[in-house]
Image (cartoon, rainbow, N blue to C red; front, side, top):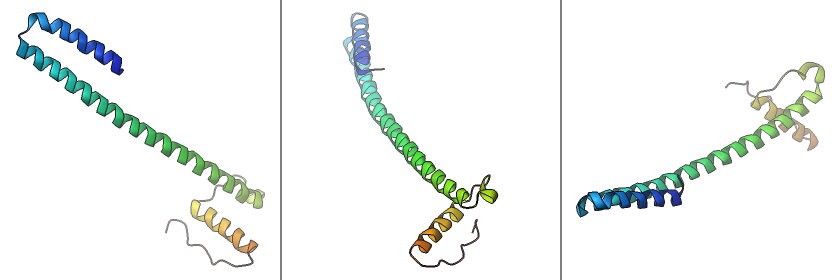
Length: 117
């Protein structure tokens, strides 16, 4: 419910309550309505914050996925007959990429840890 709609509801509530209730009851009902409006505003802000965080995490996941896919395609292209239908684990892929970097820099890396350890 939008803020304007909530205001209209509160005004309608005030108009209905005023003629039939004593002043104390009417004031309580109006105060409760205003408290509900405040709570709704706080809830809306919290929901927006959560939705923004979810969108941020989705964007991060999409970037990581794309980067992984680029690395996997390069890993597969190095030996297409054996790797065409295989995806390496992240550890294997990172080690392979580091080996390529080391070769380009004229260095040598040790053996990778077995996956899952």
